Image (cartoon, rainbow, N blue to C red; front, side, top):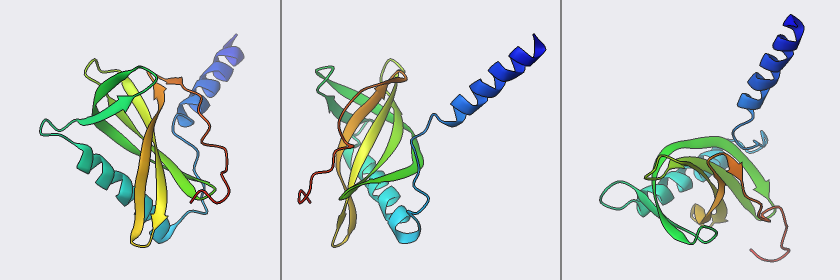
Length: 136
């Protein structure tokens, strides 16, 4: 019985460590810093007077008023763009994980779009994994 409890505790610890998005360790230096800077700039630029970010959620069909909790460190490449994410809370304290599509530009990096990836820990399916040749 004790070994079963240890296995369950180990599984829960591993699961807790995988809450944040994947991370491509080969994305380093100025690229990593530029992607995170673009995310911070995007969130800051979207904030209204009250300090919250307004984001339209087409699946829920409503405008969300979101407060930043944490920018994730993880970044992955998806063809001609990068994906990184951040956690936000809405007015009812529900956690929303937004994925940011970050594109390289002549000046550095820019967030092209934010997509709701999870609501209350429940993942939504979308097709960012597709690679569109020649799109960017």
